[in-house]
Image 1 (cartoon, helix red, strand yellow):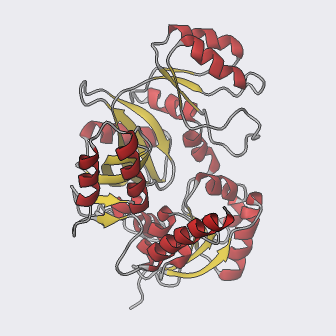
Image 2: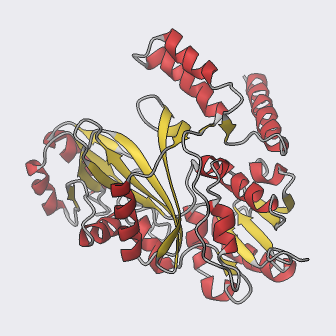
Image 3: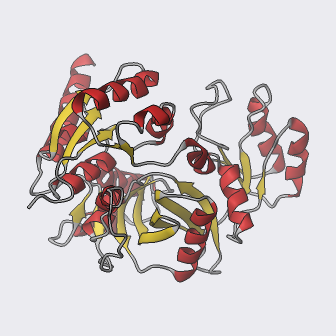
Amino acid sequence: MATPEAGHTVLVVPADTFIALTVVRSLGRRGVRVVGLSSEEGVGRFSRYCAAHWDMPKEKDDLDKVVLDLVRKEKITHIFATSDPAIMRLNRHREELEQHATLLFPPPETVALAIHKDKTLACARRVGVPCPQTLVIASEADIAQAADLQFPVVLKPRHQDIAVPAVKGPSFRVKYCASYEELVRELSVFRESGDYPLVQEYCEGRGAGIEVLMRKGRPLLLFQHRRIREYPVSGGVSTCCQSVELDAKLRDWSIALLQEMQWDGVAMVEFRQNPATGRAVLMEVNGRLWGSIPLAVHARCDFPYELFRTSLPGAVLEFPPPYRVGLQCRLLAAETKWLKDAVLHSPIPAWRAIAQYLSGFRPDMTYYVWAWDDPRPALATFFGRIQRLFSGLVRR
C-alpha cells in the first residue's frame, strides 16, 4: 500500500548546514524523496537520504530563479528553506512557486514580523508577553532618551532583512555599552544611514527556547531545551544542549505571540530567564528551524517531518506522544572549540572543563551530525577540515 508520502519530492535549500542535514534525514528515513541545493562543502549533499543535489548559484540573488527552474524540471512538490535569506529570496517568487510546489515557510508579510525585531516586540506587547525595556531610534534626536536607561545596555540589529540595502552601518550581532557616553559613540557610526539598532536593557540569565509547530492557529508540537555549553564560553552558539520539560508560562506566552503573528509553520520563541529572580523576557522569534533542531528530532519531536506531513491534503492534525526529557545532543567540532576556550579563557578549572568534555562520550549521547545509519556527512566534514588545515599549512 502506498504511503501518503509516496510520490512527493522535497527540495531542501540550502542543504549546507546540520539544520538542513536534520531535515534531509528526518524526511528520508520516512521514505520521502529528498533533494538538495547546496554549496560544494554543504553537509546535506553527503547524506544517504539525499537522492540528488545541485550546486547553489554563484550569485545569491539568482536563488529564486534557479529554484523555480528546478521545480519545473524535477517535479518538486515541496520546498523546505533552512535559512532566513533563502526564505526571503524565495518569497520574491512565492506566487509563481506556489503554482508548482507547497512552500514550507511563511509568506513575506508574516516573515517580516520575525525578521524585524521591533515588529516582534510590538506583537508581544499587544498580548502581554514581557519584553526588555527597549528604545527604538528613528532619528539622531531620539538618542538622548537613552540617558534614562539603566546601564549596561545592549545594541542589537533592528532587522536582518536582505531587502534593505546593505550599506546601513557595520555588521554585528550584539554589542554592550557600559555607559551613556559609550552608547553615543557606538551609535555615531549609524548617523549617515539612519538605520539605528535597537537599544535594550541588559537582562541577566540563561536563554530558554520554546519551539513550536503551529497549524491553523494552534500548536501541534511543542518542545523546550536548555543550553549546557556555549562557544565562546562567554556566550554564543550552543555546543551541547538538553531537552527539558515545558515551562507552562513560557509555553503560553509563545503560543499567544505566534497566534498574534498569525504564524503557520515552525518557529522558536527565545526568552532570557533569570534563575535568581524568576523574571523572563522575550528576546526574539526565529521564524525557521533553529540550530538545536537535531536534539528535538532525537527526542521524538520530529518538526521537519510533521511540518511536511501536515501540509499534505487531508492530513490529520494530531498531537504526537510526549518527547524524551533529559536527552542531550552535542556538536562535536564546536565542543572541541569550547574545550580550548574554557581551558584558556574561562574561570572554570582546566580539569573540570576536560572532565565535562570527556563525559560527553557516552552511549546515550546524541549528535548534531554523526549518525550510525548515515556516517558520510560527519566523515566528509572531518576530512574536509583536515584538508583545509593541510592546505593552509602548505600555503604558509
